[in-house]
Amino acid sequence: MSEIHIQRSHDLGLLPARKIARHWAERAVDKFGMECTYEETESGDLLHFTRSGVDGALRVAPDGFEMNAKLGFLLSAFKDRIETEIARNMDAMVAGQDDFDAPAAADAGATAQAPTATLPVPAPSSLS
Image (cartoon, rainbow, N blue to C red; front, side, top):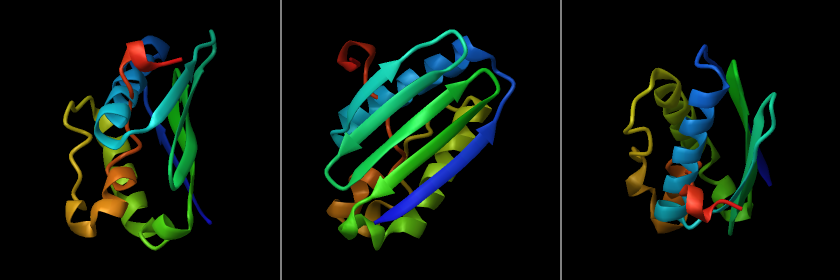
């Protein structure tokens, strides 16, 4: 099992960061079939995501995002590519770009494609 850990600082504050994380979750549910749960607190939030082959969490703070994910055996072969995509997407999220879910690794195959393109985000109505 492979692990991914990525951190990005920002100066957005909690409410805008929360909005970005929820948007990411919506896309994760819609595009990759992720199951997501979102926990809000006054000091920061936690977005849990899972699907076959990937399990992780995105910590949302007023001053940064931190993602930890575990990849199953099959997706471990694509760890470097997945990690690169997640890092690219987190950079786009922090920069305020709305197209942060576009997968650059779509040619990696169907098995890797779902988790490869960002650890996505589910719609607010889909969040538990």
